[in-house]
Amino acid sequence: MPQSWTARPLYEVKAGLFQGLTHPYRILILELLADGQEHTVSELGLHTQLEASHLSQHLAVLRKNRLVVSERRGSHVFYRQFSPAVAELLTVARRLLKDLAADASLQWDEVASLPEIPSR
Image (cartoon, rainbow, N blue to C red):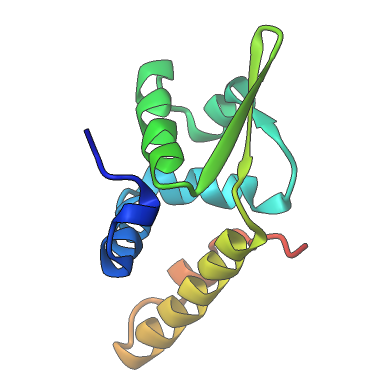
């Protein structure tokens, strides 16, 4: 059984947060939730085009690492980001990506074509 957050060293908790960000679809899910609204699993499935089982696995990792929270209401499960800081983290990652792309002379068009992360 995993240790609770309060019993683990801070560096392990931080590593867990970053582990939650290690898959492109989890980043996409977090970006979809960056609008500050709650979204159903069905809505997230439409936007990600993931099979329900794969989407469920990604959402479980995000929940485990406390990047998202969920709430069941009737037959629907609603998801939202745990904190506005998650959207801020994604925005900082975008800025870093742009800096890295410029430094490495990567295709700017690819980076510039990424959808905007809504600000709150």
